[in-house]
Image (tube, rainbow, N blue to C red; front, top):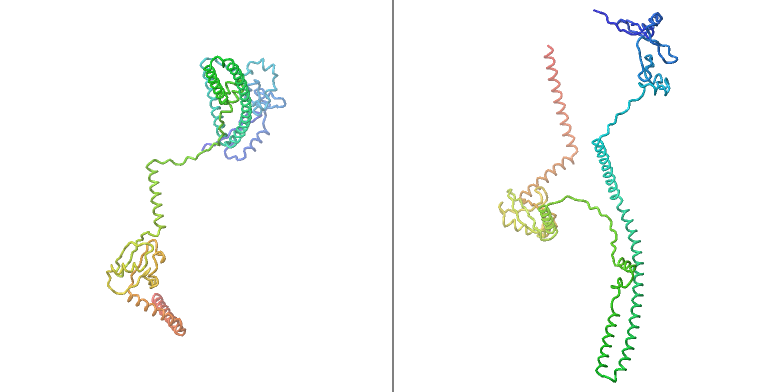
Length: 431
């Protein structure tokens, strides 16, 4: 088999160190080579590290891209030899290899339009997000908005009340002024008419009557003018300021109402709603029937031969009525019987015949059993005999002790017999 060699380079002479596979400690081999290494003979072929204070030389070159100097393997990176401090900025600017590459920007109408379109889309997305955030805050702070609107409404209401009072005072003053002027005019007209009448009395009596009629008509017209509602025509008589204030006073301000968010429940179709209403009615009727006294109950009576009788009775019907029904429809003979709640329970007595079904607590599905008195008597005698025997055995202690001794002896006899049989079987197998 050919041996495997592991090759390493010496950092001084840059020669290969052949390591066999059976060598475990490679560091020891390298140290032995370093003690015997002669690196002066090959100095002419080496490249020195250009970093100050580093005297390492090696065959391969490690030229830096930014400063174009040679460095060893330990200082080949730009951060290891502080590449920015090697040359001054003036030399770096003069050196075209060190200058950064400029981006070539091509301006085009299509590119500009595409850029503007992207900016518009970003702005729209921001506005949509901002609007959604504002809506969420408004829904959360609806109570705060309502309180603010209420305060504003109260302030507006106060201002409108003050303006209304001022307008009313202005309207009243204007009405008083107009009434005074009308009264003065009427007085002057009356004086003039009186003078005319006095001058014309001697001339014509008919003219006097006509003048008097005219005067009366004039007085009626003046009175009608005085009775006119100036509150409606105040806007035409008053100035522009009073008209604006009166119009503002007549407008009704609706108070702010709180925002009510209704919870949306599951929607139903018309057919489903009708079915729900019918079910509600049926349940209500059943509840009323159950609570009322006239509810009908289906009573089942099991006869001694296994047959069943069913009939409808009310809750207030007595047990005697059920017994009459059984007497009319029996098919198990004419022997005397008794009604029981269970076949093994005690029969109902004569005092229970006058009680109702509700008093006997037989609801909601009452079932009764017919038990013949002969069978009932026999079962009572048998149960009494069993109880008497049990009491006799329990009361006679000596008899119990004798029975216990006999059972123990019988068990001991069976055990000994089994033991002897097993022993004989073992002896037979042994021989």
